[in-house]
Image 1 (spheres, rainbow, N blue to C red):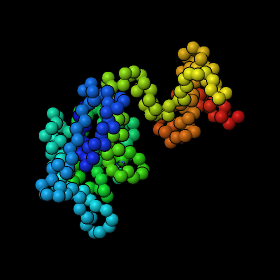
Image 2 (cartoon, helix red, strand yellow):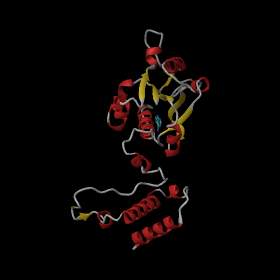
Image 3 (spheres, rainbow, N blue to C red):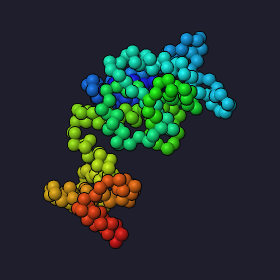
Image 4 (cartoon, rainbow, N blue to C red):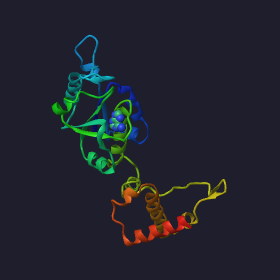
Length: 245
Ligand code: ADE
């Protein structure tokens, strides 16, 4: 999968050289390329922004350098690339959207800076607008990297143990169950006995109950979106009784 980033700060994407994403780059499962609008300016000052029509604080990114950088990305692409604008005005990124994006071969991610980009670019170069959360970042670069990381995890062969991605939080619409590792006791806190029992059916039951219970406690709106089996309802009732006693 190819990620083309339109950004004024390509150096930031060095963060993509580590961990799971770094390995996916090294093995050629993904390719990340940056296109800096400043490199596509024709004036001596390499101007990429200007004041906002109508007044107000801050600068707005101009259409021409962005459009030229998008063109640069297209010329470097083997296949058709959809455009994604990272902006707090976008639709909230969630697991379902991540899955949809992960079947694309090629994306152009526009990482805006300053107060935003000239609205007319979205008419000239249509795309989807995505937000990574209801807060404002200083630019779209970190949001682009969040998107690249989470989409890359979904690509076949990227995460060694495919089961680990399938079991990620949100894959089944639930939060993850709690995890424990050695030692068995720390600060008088013991690993739950069932996890040491070797009884796989009981372990699966414990984990499902915890996933359901934590989602009920912390993100009840997620529970409302999924269909619970009769066993799920029983496990959740047990969890509720145990936590209220
Ligand atoms: N750019 C600035 N804030 C953002 C956010 N929350 N999501 C995506 N892009 C952004």
